[in-house]
Image (cartoon, rainbow, N blue to C red; front, side):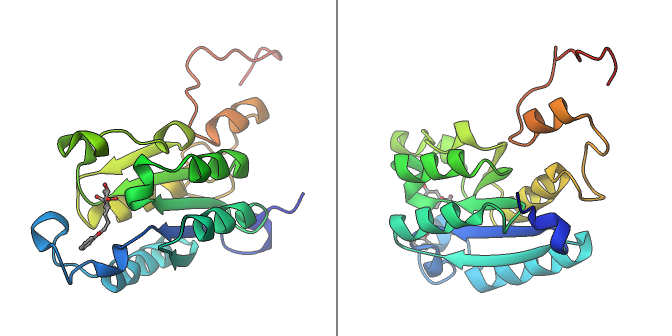
Length: 186
Ligand code: CA2
């Protein structure tokens, strides 16, 4: 199978969900004054420092996001996603992320767990390695650092040289506590 990281720098697909193009223009009391372009600029700079390359996409359409995730395997090493309102509603995006089987991190500007009850459920959280929420634009940079730390071939990987059976569990951030190796060593 094609592995994106063998071709060049590790590649991360960044997906911004619906209405995030409005950031900085409306509703500053909830989402702050930072614009989506400023977030993307900071992410690109951080990726350069960490030795990764980014492709950024914003879509207001569930199907567009599903298509992008569906095509990611083989081309990207990981996915950073703010699914926005689809966080709380989209079984389709959840299923696409699960099927892609790539390391993925969910980010939110606001602390969704401290807001209206309908925002407290994420359909996405069970199929990603982790969620960063509540730190404004910093949620994205924290999420990107965490994601890059999960990439198997990246020098910043938290788990370099780990054995194969650990790698496959860590790929999606699965807990490894209690795992025993059949070969008796790790
Ligand atoms: O906190 C987040 O990042 C959210 O994903 C943002 C979504 C919201 O539906 C989620 O519950 C939490 C909303 C994105 C729309 O952003 C706007 C920005 C400015 C003005 C209006 C909407």
